[in-house]
Length: 308
Picture (tube, rainbow, N blue to C red):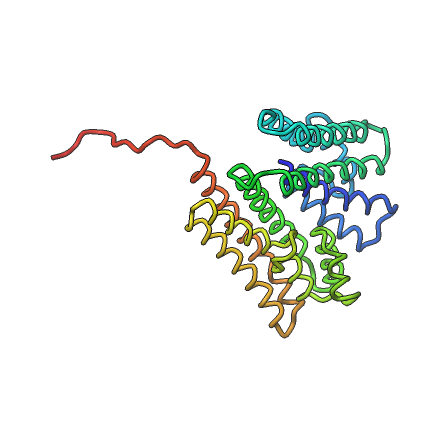
């Protein structure tokens, strides 16, 4: 739930910041449409909302009973259920981040109340909650079974959300590719890294390499599959580890096709259906992991009379 909330908050914050600029330009309207579609796919907004009222839709999601509020409640209940397994410091860090996020959401969801700034602040609070959980998991958990499956769940969830988001954003006309690449880097929290590597030159192959195939980038799609494969190997399931590795190789192949293409822009524009297929196969991998490690299935029994 926390990983999903963090991704939704990143998308919502990007949309709200564009709305806060005043009357949007045509390019910004196109980006708002994309962000709205991403928020629907991520489960924060309803599909029948109007993209032009993304701020009102997000306000309703933050209100009690809204999608964001419900998911924060699920996360809070899980933390309470694990209270006896958490140190006082860890539990306190989680509860403080949850309390602040809930207060920010309540303040931002008042009808005709605070403006866009309060909603941006609430989105930032949800992102901070995700950062808190990730930081505690990285530095405060023994590398045992609990940490392994927590991190595995985060990797699979992030891979699925990232693949869906990239597919939506890349599904644009060729003449919008520059804006598309900027939005990809923003949503994958990779804009600063890109500028540090390539200065101001924005090109499809290096941008897609950074957000898709760079196994050193914790926001890249390949990183999620690389880590998932390693974690599944540690869990003792070579078959599932091989499935995650196969998804990793498919992502690497996508970037290779763009880099080798005579027209990289056209090659990048052809990626959305392939990314959607990867997202679907990631969901299938998630189901297999659930059945393998978490589902309690009854033993198979034969029904009926035996025939001699």
